[in-house]
Length: 564
Image (cartoon, rainbow, N blue to C red; front, top):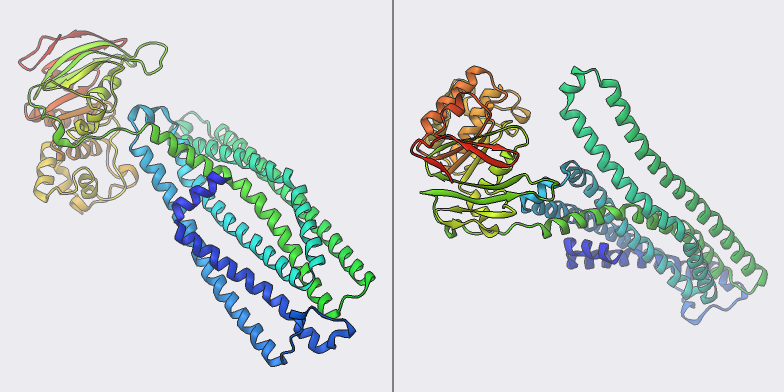
């Protein structure tokens, strides 16, 4: 719990938390003083009923003074409560936004090898759902502070009026709270289970929505619905268990607190000797304390229920930090102007069998190299190494004689552009998608990149560059998306352009356009093409073939690349 509160303090700031504490104290103090004011007010009407009051309570203001003071206290309490609510909302927002920022920064700055091993569906669930629940946990922490201070203020007011009554009531309240420790502990367990269920549902929903075409094509709609329904049922079962426990705990506190209050009143009246001016405020204090005691138990239980969300965010942040990638300025790496060399590169990354085995080759700057091989032969992994996403487990890569180490991966990636098999476009306009890779690109540079990618069709669209692409570029055809992605890659003016099966899902016409674009790009930049066969492979200066992680063949170089 201490680490959770420390996390809240770190994101919210000590000044804001101090302000929240001060305002909460003000709200609680004004409420306690309001009950104390009842004593002189009742004393005026009852004239003490023959019972002496404590010396400090023998104050006989007139009715107008008491009422004015009462109104002032209510005004002060209302203003303090308003300010407290605003500060609490600010604290909540800063914690939620801070956690999201840290999680996203951790993921974006982590090594690709670590990211590829994570279940990103669970990460998305944490960022979208779990951290929102963490914000609720912050609200509960603020409520816990408010209720605790309110009860403390009431206890202090009771202590001023009747120390014996106050001490007895405080002892009873502490005993009641202690008796419900089991419910609070179970709430913590159920909260962890709920966090897990949310992540599982998010992953399954994401998988189902991404596979809608497949689901319909094989008539699996009902089965998919049933599987999702089972996941929701499991989550609702956990929620129901928590609601049941919460209801039992609330009812038990209410009943026991009411019995204890009734017992105290009976004893006080039976023993006699308590002035009405004291008795009525004490009863009012007890009546006010009972719902606050219930709220304390409920808030503590709900706080435990939501605490696992803070732990889940903290764990992911800590994991991402341990996997953080080192960075180096661009100027620290020599330019790629001669050769890219792989020396006995191997990679297994914990697999039962090596993914790559002692791959050695030299790629000359300006060449077009086709990397071929069966599925699972290691093509994508080798491309990831060449592109600077990961380091080999053994061997090394050198750019113009300079070895690439972890510290220089990011610097090398700044010189590499990657066009994926499924062209990735974001919602927004074509212009926004292009500028995403090169924010400072001019209209002339954009036009040049579109021309080099054979994507001049953009100029013929009704809105031109401002044409919306739709969700994930769905308003454009596959060939159009791929050529825009190629233009975006070229805007970066890369030293190395990697294309991963760029035409595998395209028609022959779109493939021909991509082929013409690559033919014109030859010599101006180094191109690594991952493909099986077809027009694009025929354009290559050399073909490197992988088989079960080994480089087995390479066609004779045509002035630009060689196998070692």
